[in-house]
Every structure is written in C-alpha cells, then in structure tokens.
Length: 116
Length: 111
Image (tube, rainbow over all chains, first blue to last red; front, side):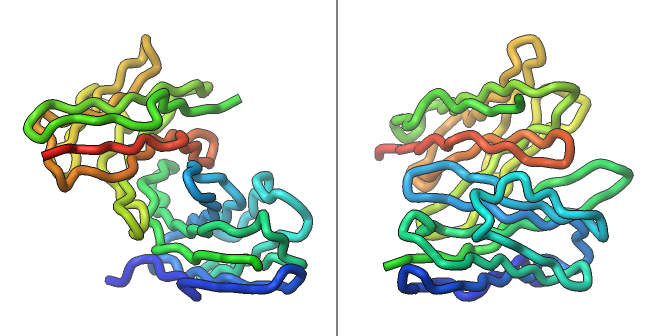
C-alpha cells in the first residue's frame, strides 16, 4: 500500500505568483490535514478535512490560502500572490476514523516552497 | 486553549545512556497523545500513541512513553540511546478533531 504522496517535492516561485500543492492521501483515510513547517519551527496547523463535512479552516493564515478536497480523496492547497514569508515545508497527513476515534496520522514527504 | 509544550529545544545524551524527551499538555477532556519522529530530510513518522488503558505505552525502535494524568505529561523515554536515534521529536495531542503539536525537541546522541 502506498503512503501519502505530495507533489511537487520542491517548488521555487517568484513573489506574487500563485502556487498549487497537491496531496494524495492513503486510500480509505477519511481525514486529511495540511500543516506548515518553517525552518526550525514546529508544525502549524492550516486546514482539516473530514469526509464530506465542511473543512476546518481555522489555521489558514490569510485569505491568500485556500484548499479543496475533491471526491474525498486528493487535496490541493493553493497560495495566491505568494510572499517570502510563505516559504516553508508544507506537509499533508491523512488519518483513518474508526468508531469515532481518530488514529495516528501518516505524513507525506512534504513540499518545500521557496518564494524568491 | 489547547496547547502542547516541549520545554527542551535540544537534548544531548551519550550512546548507551537512557534518554527522556519531555512533553506536557493542556487540553480539555481526555486527549489522545502521540509521539512522532522526523529524521533529516524525511517526513514525520509515527512512534507511539496513548489512547486509553495502561499508562506506559511501547512503540517503535524501542521507545516508550508514560502518560501521567495528574501531571498532564507524556514523556518519551528509551533505556539505551543509539546514535541513529538522533532526530527531531514531536509530541502531539488529538482533541476535538484537531492535532496540536509541540515545537519539537532535537535529540543528539553522541557516540
């Protein structure tokens, strides 16, 4: 079974451009999370999807950030008008749900975004 | 507010010695507790979790952690450290559909 995959692995973009980051979760996992990890920092929660429920967007740092999850599987994180402070590693994780309990998250390798 | 604290940015230990990486949390209700490890240029990997039951949980690579409800702690331990254990360790709490991560502790194991 494949793990969580993310693409691209690295992205260099110019300030002001839009970028899309993709996450393919583990098949059957209903929960999907996006995090941001800046150099030397911990994980910053961005957004959470669970099944067909409305996503929890409480961690998105600004309205330049948005995410969608199509068909309850693949997710795309979009950053519009990128700024240098957006440079970070963006991590995606998925998790199963059983009997109302969430289990451990499985993380993808991340996308390293550099805004020049 | 929910929060997780890892009070040590870095822990240094000699190979063969026991290690402890500290974690305390502040959440409402009964949380699920996790430890993850991040090796250089790698994604986060699950080490162990506490959901319910025995306070001492055992996980991958010989690690274990003890849940202490009164002290709201979930310290990670290993009886004998290996150089290959050198990595960044994150404590996390799952509560109300979200995971809250600590800031991470860098473990350095010297030969």
